[in-house]
Structure formats: C-alpha cells, structure tokens
Image (cartoon, rainbow, N blue to C red):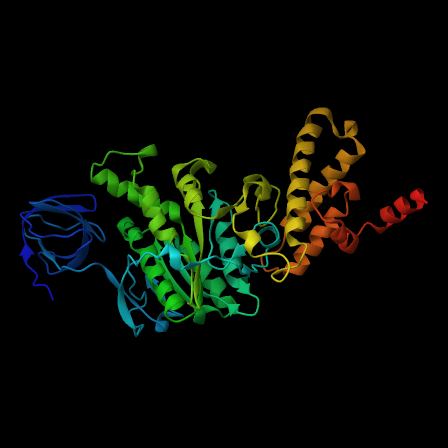
Length: 469
C-alpha cells in the first residue's frame, strides 16, 4: 500500500477544482483524500498533473475548504466501487453509498469504476431480439440484446414513463427477464420517486439496482454515477452470467458537467462550449454495452438524452448518434396529439434490428412488414402536407387512403397504454390490419406469399378475382 503524504500546499480553489502545488509523482485519475480543518474528509480525483502541481476535482463542493489549513493526501489508487449480487434490491447515491444509513450491503469485491475496454475481437454480434411490448419499438426499431439505443427526447416529453415501461416489460423469449441497473444522473426527486414506485409496483425491486444522483446533489458527482452503475452491470453480466438492462437518465446532465469542468480548467472549448474530448468520453460509457463470446451474460443500454431546444443537431445527441446503434426519437407533435408513446418512426432507427428479426427469431414477415409500414407512413406524411395546401377534396382516391392510413397508424400502432404489453405477434397483426387499408398493389416491399397469407382485405381480393374472370 502506498504511503500517503499530506500536502498543505493548496494554491487555489475554484468551482469543483483545487490546484495543489509542490506535488511529486501524482497520477492521472488518482484518488485523493481532502481533510478540512474541522476533521471532515472529502474525496477527490486528479484531473491533470505537471512536474510541480496537480489539479484535483473534488467530489462534492469546495465550500468550507480553507487553502491554508486543508490538507490533501494522494492515495495512489483509482476510484473503486463495491460490486455484488447483494446490491440487487437496494438504492445507492451517486457515489455508490447506500441511501439509507441502516442498509447493510455485502460487497463481493471492489472494482475500478473506469472498467476495462472490451476487446473488439471478443465481442459477439447482437442477434437476439428483446420484446419491449411497445409496437413502435418492437415492430419498427427492434432492440437487440447487447445493443445500445438512446432515447432522444425533449423537455416535458414522457421519456421517463417510456423508460420505466420498457424496464417493466423487457424480456428475451426463453431467457427470462433482465436484471436492471438504473442510474439517475441529475434527475429530480419526482422522477426518482416515479421510477422507484414503478419498479416496486411490479415486484421487480429484487432484480434492480438503483444509483440516484439528484439535481440537488453536487454536479461533479454526475461524472461518477454512470461509471459506478456500469461497473456493477459488468459484474452481474460477465461474472454472474445475468442479462442486464442499464438505463442512464439523463446523459445531457452528464455532458453539462463535463462542460462545467472543462470551463473551470480553462480548456479551449469545442462546439457550443463543450470539451473537444466529449465524443471520446461518451464513448467510454456507451461502449461498455455488448455481448462477449463464451460469456452467458450481456449488457443492453438505454440512455435518455434530453435534446436542448428539441435540437437533434445539438452536440450531445449528435455525438451520441455516432457512437450508438440508432435512436428512439420522441416527437412533440405526436405528444401534443395525446399519443403515447410519442415515438416518431421516421426519426427513429435501430441499425442492428435486421440481425434479430425474421424466421427463427420473430415472425417470418417481420422485416418486410416493417419496411412497408415505414414507406406507407412516409407517403402518408407527404399526402398530409399536400392536403393542407390543396384540401382533402382535391386528393386522389389512393391519396385519401394513405391519409386515412396515417391517422390509423398513429392511433392504433404507435398509440398504446402505459401498461399495455404487446407481443411480436400482436404488433405484426396490427401492422397487417393497417396495411390492408391500402390496395394490394401498393404493397411493393412484401413478398407475394406473405400477402396471400396475411393480407386482410378479403372483399377487395374477391372483387379483383371476379373482374379477372
């Protein structure tokens, strides 16, 4: 164990940072102990070093720190958090400590919260579909085990309700439910209470670990919270063989803390003041999801990203989109129509879904139904725009059908109850009900054999057959 030397050479305290002078052999990410004059102890982490000084990030605030009487000790270790199966069913704060003082937790071991990168050659390609019970996801943007898929939302949209519903309902056919690791990053007390109550309502607290960093907690703690949560998830997945669903809410708060620290360090800002290394930093979190060959467990990530000003080109959602395998896009227009979940299919994407759907995985017609629904809804949106200019009366018969299809698609396929859980079969049956509103010749993306099997407009078929005779 490294001998700790206490330094009382703090030169400056600003924001969450301390500048400690005359420090030898300090290492990047090294944990330090900060002891105040009254005996209170706080933790910090080395952010930058030189031959003569170190910049220390305090986990908390710098209130009460007197630069003349406060001492700083360098431990020679990185930040480690306790992990173990005994953490399931318990709630922890953003630093990984039990929220209730009387809670006893038996940790199996302590691990570096920065984790170890997964060797790309050891990764297995995600190929198993997760049934969330939500048609707009299962039918059109299927989530796979081991995938990372963010939820792009806006202020006031029900992303927390959607995330809680996915957490309640997500399962893998034949492989049971997920263990859930929830990390609340700068969330309100109401959001934390809502998620906790939803988990308890279905009796899932015994398979859930919660880490809560509230909006009122020190912002610097938000750097730790997702890393501690992912460290526990990695232990459950790759050492205990569990399928783990990780929910990080809200990554925008995390990125804002990165900007705050970068500004305090007087770094040259990048886009909109965010640090130039934000892409790498976000990737260090997102890339901890996946499936590893010859390992039973897996980590699937759902990350909430609240887009400032509903701007999808903002650096946070923009960089997130580059790193992750698609996105679930929430629409304010659909929400204003009273549609829940307000998932806009045309703005959503799951890049891996083709590997987990189709014959032997979901129903054989899944991929083609999804493609046809996408195409038809896009056409319906175009017709809707045209009708606002020339009026519905000036539309052709085919265009009126697409207009009606668009309305039904939003109200029957996208819209569903907060506690309504649909199977893949039910989702695809609804899809065929809607596609049957269109003439058969419009179904250009579906094989004839599937049309004969699933197309439901029997009267049109019979009329067409009689005309040919």
